[in-house]
Image (cartoon, rainbow, N blue to C red; front, side, top):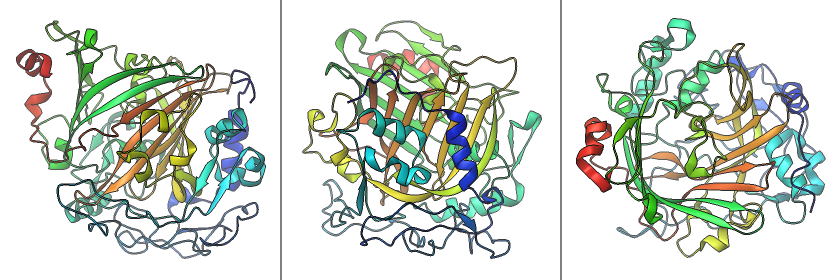
Amino acid sequence: MSDPTDFHPDRRQALGLLLGAAASAATARGALAQSAPAPGTPAPSAPAQSAPADVGVPRLGEELTPFGAVRAGNRTRAIPPWTGGLTEAPRGYVPDRPSPDPYIEDVRWFTVGAADVERYKVRLTAGQQALLEKFPDSFELALFPSRRSAAAPQRIYDASLANADRARLGENGLALRDASVGVPFPIPANGVQAMWNHKLRWRGGTLSRTSLTVVQSGDGTRSMTRLREDFASPYAAGDAAAPPLLYRRTILDPKEQAGSSLIVQGTLDPIAARTRAWVREGERGRVVPASDFAYDTPDPVTGGICTADMLDMFSGALDRFDYTLVTRREMYMPYNAHRLINPSLTMRDILWPHHPNPQFLRYEMHRVWVVDARLKPNFKHSLPDRTFYLDEDSWQILASEHYNGKGELLRYAEAHPLPDWQVPALVPTMEFAFDLTADRYTARGVENGLPPPRYDAPLKPEDFTPDALVRRGRRG
């Protein structure tokens, strides 16, 4: 195994590869026709460069889904058509028991190992390449047949279609105007619009879950924090009077930190009303503003591996970066992560010293929007250059790369999502963020053996206020 501190992929090379393989996808002109084998065939040779399909201007809700994804599969059938996602109970489902893996019978398509990086580079993120090259003897990508399982309720689709004709960016190109309930920009014209789609994507109206955040080091040591997390989206409910996104987390363990809480209130207009946050230290501590929990402030729960704006893969204001919509293209992405949440798995099964156990990670070929972010002049951020990969079917950020000012890759993050057919929504299960300079990583959302997330929790906007923290005490 190579020295984990000596690998720094060059950002310009990674971005050049993306640009070289891109066709003018930022205008959403149909499917990208790329060479890849159909599932079930032997491992493919190096994929060809993409080329645009000459199908004219695609129509939202017809050639494009209501979220702006290309409805058709690719010409090789490696990506299937989108037919509505997973909205019915999988075979074998028993009420009041965990939902079974709907794709348990899928056979691994092929494996990408360290020796295959050059062969598949056009389909791999720079972060995946880094992990493969840093840990050639233990890390690999298991590729499975692609399942376009992302789904949403009809009212979310209807609102997204309506937003396409009315949503706009206001002051300084940052404030969101005239959008409601659904994806604001199903056919994004720029990177800011794409990032708003992620921030306001459909993931259920409310969510409450208990999970572990684990910081795992290469020497085998690990630290764990048990959290309760609550989320509400007044935006998705059509409530224009409340903050659009609300988040609360409360530490349950370790004992010395129990009761410590964080509340974050999002905003649609960072010019008029910035994102607000409050913290409470311990179950009886004072509730104080946490205006510094933003941008590149280290998130202590993750051991400082993640910054505050890496919460939920990306959150917070968009004002410090210039966002460029680079392309839409086919790449190997984490998806349908049912294997990760198997309740019979232990933490030792899943979390190896240097990286998660690849046996339980599922990757598929999916189309993603690629957004390049560069720090604006006269602003500061410890990770000034970033690349985001947004799932075209859900607008969930599936992967993100974070570089220093020299173009060296310091952090890499992946969200491993799965479809919850009962909502329906595509939601992240575990998120992994790798510190590529110190050989450690954090896993967020580890819930094996814990009660499943609740997507109908009776949460109200007033539950996400400083007064609520004072009233609730340790229950946070």
